[in-house]
Image 1 (cartoon, helix red, strand yellow):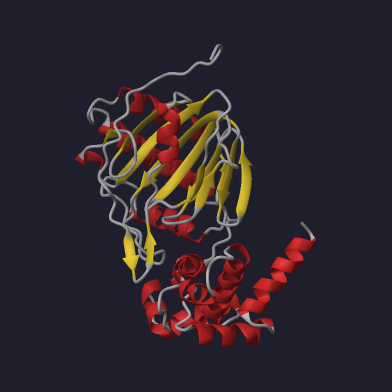
Image 2 (spheres, rainbow, N blue to C red):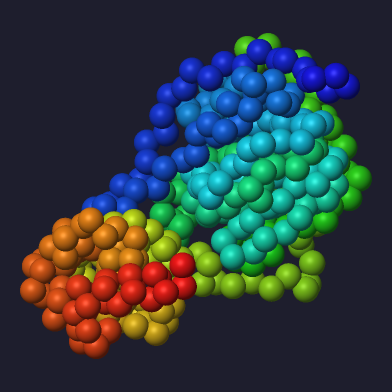
Length: 353
């Protein structure tokens, strides 16, 4: 590994799990950064963080409760790993000091360049790398706002000292603004450079006051950056429609569950009427129709890819109560039986092989 400058910094990875939010089959887990830990152990990059719960790094103390992770990695050689789609329980700010970094959030994919800052709301899906991360120095700050469902109120840590009006304005912008990537100025860059120094010189919480001050300063800079007249706010991002949208995105992983409309609404954390309204608006389908279509799509995929599974096994895996009911629904939608569909796919696949 000639010419590669790799610095090894001690990092404690003993962790205490964050309690996930669970509601009848849908579970949101906070990320554990395992690919990052593995890359660090393989001496692929520099890494330093202060953290609590499942996040890697030296342990944060009680003086920064609400701050779950603050740190950086510095990769100065090509990397062979990335952080695939994941979620965090808090709001997360990323900042790229140098290099380039592929970054995706919900349906947006961008290539970050120096001085780019990203904002990820609590439990919002995002990934870093495509599939591998780029070479560069990359920071993150994760603040737990007590959110276990997207439409819940945000509760900032007590040590956040912005005035009530400033904090309300910042919260409104962060929650309701669709923009997730910002080009920052030298002040934000200098703030992260100071965060870098505070992290590197901390010894068992000795820099807690500095870190709290720097995060408050960062929030003030972000308010200054974002508080412009051309910011477009969308109230739907904060209400129950976002909870329903998250639930629908996760539903595909739990299709075998014996769902009813009441069950789905409860899992999304809203009432049946509101759930039905948002589902129809988001998908143009009623909840049960949407569920049926998702199950049918999964069954078609399983019939194509798992030829050893019986029709009954496919039916139960996809959430149909009986193989007869599955066959009836399938034939109504596809104009053929499940077995005929499988045979037809195999013949077509053989012809084009």
